[in-house]
Length: 55
Image (spheres, rainbow, N blue to C red):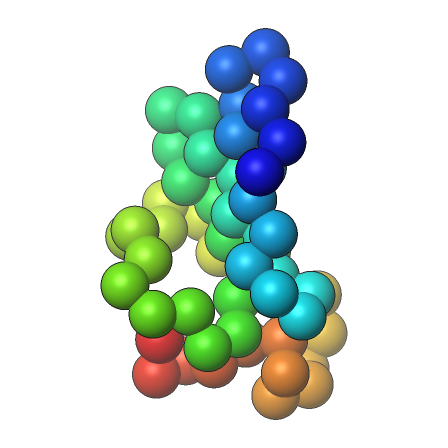
């Protein structure tokens, strides 16, 4: 995890990231289990390894 100015950035594996401050943002979440509820969800493109809707 990297933290700067109160913003926490965590690598979730593969191409996924979580950015957390007052809100939680996920970028390309793939097979994440037990994560926090997202306020914003960003998907870079339509490959299955960049989003797993069942999570």
